[in-house]
Length: 175
Image (tube, rainbow, N blue to C red):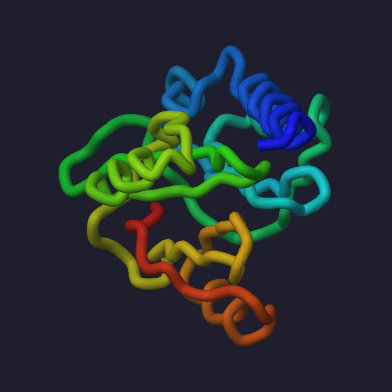
């Protein structure tokens, strides 16, 4: 690994860590909130997508790090575990300013074991079943460390109208 690449990865890690300082992905979005909107942001230079259910974390990402909020329609995540639900985890890529979400415990272990991701914790809780319109799907951009999620209708639009995106599979149901 070159010194330049090492320094770039170190700077990337420091920036990613500072976005979540004081509000890890596992923090409740608000002490009294049962659900919170899932917020999608684009990382600087459109290198990837970032998701949070914490409005303060979203503001910090925009104000301090140049992330941009998207108008992407998503839904809500639960702040606490519920019957019929599962945790939605946020992981950060170790090679790019990009994040991936998973609700699959086996998939989580595999992603961490690959050494290509750092687990940033539980973003919220999603249903294992639910309204098909609120099903979330994970997509990846071909040959790049770039992922995003979308509800069913938006997933179909992305696959139809945005070349380069491919479907990874479902990741639960938003509320």
